[in-house]
Image (cartoon, rainbow, N blue to C red):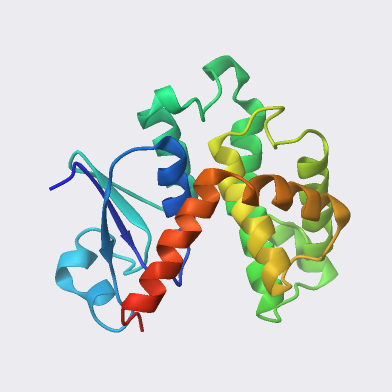
Length: 207
């Protein structure tokens, strides 16, 4: 058994973790979890009590939540060069967790038709959807990548939000988002990860 296991479903945010794993180039085992049964099984709930994917198990340690998985893999596989030096991590952490917090919540709520009233904005970490999108556009426009001129694990998570948002219409189509997405989707690891997950969708019962 591999000392690195990905629990996933290709119709889920597990695609983000798969992309991150392909970027670090580590050997890993894949366990496909179905929504109807195995994801809610006692065995899997002992790994992630939320009954959701993805999760990774690395040398007996469990990590859940996509942003945490990205950050963890960047540190666990330093030879991949996907986490900046400690002294240079301000933008790396800032935008990784901005995407995991305000962007994720603003986009999800907006897609679900939940729009806070103006006087409720202070209650929500994202303030409002439009403001969050403006800040996200700024983040991906300053440099080629969110933490500077080099691709990092922050781009896996931020990039997934932008790519999916443009694909499904939950983020407006803007030139800055399109250019950023194009840089990311041209990466070998991104394309490899998608090919692997697309193949899983063809060969597994995933409901």
